[in-house]
Each structure stands twice: as C-alpha cells, then as structure tokens.
Length: 358
Image (cartoon, rainbow, N blue to C red; front, side):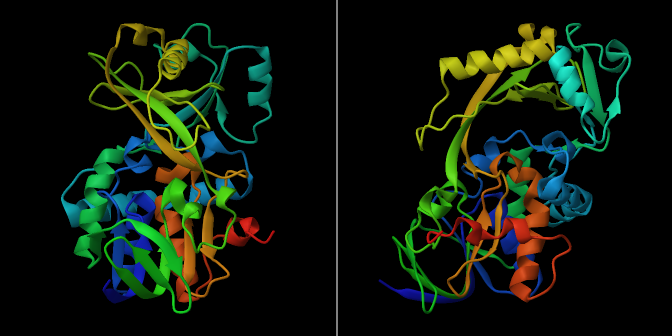
C-alpha cells in the first residue's frame, strides 16, 4: 500500500470538511479531502438549511457561535457563488417560534429576545388560526443545502483543495497517518470532519459515543404559490418555504444507529406538524422524502479543536445546526490550527470533554 504525504488531510467531504479545507487552503495550506462517496452525500444535503441561531438557543455558547456564524454568512455566500458560479439560495426570511396553548405561550414569554406578534393572521395569513402566540426573530435566514454542496466543493477546488475518493479505516499517530482502503496518507495535520461517523474511527482518542447518529426524516412539498415566508417552529417541528414554492417540513429525531430509511410513522408525524402550522399544506404535493444522520452530542455543542494526539483535530458534532455553523466552525478551527486566538470563546467546544479516558 502506497503512502502519500500531505500538509493537511481532512476526513469527510460534507459541509464542514469542505469548508475547513477551503479556509485552510486560502491561508496557504496544502489540503487533501478524503471522502468515501461524493462531497455532501450524507447529512449536509438532507438538511433544511435553516440559519436560525435564535430559534435554536436563548443564550450560552450555542447562540454565541450561531450568531457569529450567521454574521459571516453573507460574505461567505458571496464568495462561494463567485468562486463556483453556483447560486446557493441565501434569503433573509425571518423566523418565528409559534405557540399553540397556554403552556407553550408561557414558555415563549420566558425568552430573553424576539418580538411578540400581536396580529398573527395579518403577519402570516396562512398560519393556523389555532396558533395562540408567536415570537419573531427578523434576522434569521435560510439557504438551499444541495445548492451549497454543489458550490462549496467547487470553491474549495478553486482555492487549491484536492479531493480523493477513499474509505478511511483508521488513524495512526506519531507521525499522524490516515489509513484508507486505497492507501495511507501522512500529514502534518489531520482534521476529522466525518459527521456522525467521526468517533467511530479507530485512533480517534474520544469515547465512541461522543458523537452519535441521530436519524432525521424530512419531507419536501410543493405548492402552487408561496403560502408563507417566515421559518416557522413549534415545539414539535418546523416548516420553511423556498421562493419557488417548495416547502420543507421536519423533522424526526430517532436514535436507531445507522439504519437508513423514511418511515410511515415519520412521515405521518411530519405531516401532522406541517398542517398544524399551515393547514393549507394538506393540499400540497409530496415531491420528495429524505433522511440523514445528524451528528448528535449530549450537550448539543460541536467538537471543534485539538485532541490529545498531536496534529489530530476534530470538527464534528454540529447536530441539527451543521449548515448554520459551517462558516464559523471553519474559521475557528483554522485559527486554532494557526495558533491564533478565535473570535469567540471555544472552551465549551473542546473535544477532550468527551475524552475516552474521562
């Protein structure tokens, strides 16, 4: 088996592997991405593309990281589109948390930010008349993940990143070396960005359960006209609409290992969520069903930073905020690899909080 030598090897060609590879290449590093399939083949292309830090968190490191990443998004999107020639569907559409009873209304009132909507029917006419409250966050946005994953690898290649198709079997240390089915890859730095599979790789010094697969099912619907514009979240799920009339509804949270599939129960639950929020979606056409494995962590925070193995870095565990957090995660890890001080505190994101020795 031949051994190649590289400056940086990134394991995983999803949104985070491609993002950090491009960022490092723009900083002058020579980067090879190893991907067993095609870039974006897993969860990156299945996601809804919600850029809603305030819809996900009401404070703490997740909100800080998400808000920072959303601030980076417009320039990041402009660069990707310029470098690849592919539009990625970025839209500032706003988002809202919607309540349907007194208990949910009370929980929304405890939120520290957001604007309460008084006239729900005037704000989003298609919203269910059963909705009793809504908390609006006007700065939230969306992108189309398949379009992002069409643009991002091309932008990475334009920056000088190389891609190789190989299945990684494990990591040897001293010097850091990636073992694949097709060859061995020795590198000064190795970044593990393999999503839900990241801590299953032999040689990663973290508990195997640090990142677990959380299957999520999502439905794509189509309407003859755009019924609503805001991203709408209830305590049970969400709907969002694209300008072309597509509607994404989701999603399930299932711990079934790496068992793929879209299920009857999952579809029924998602359709109930969608029509609870927007009753007119009962007449929408179901055009696609998808499922993917989100990289779940118990504290819902990603793993960004070094490990106990010299030269081995983690970039994974973004759970259901992988699309949102891609620009910030790439910059933060590249800063750490450069020995620079990151723009936001990454202490809570340290991979060693899930050390195999702890």
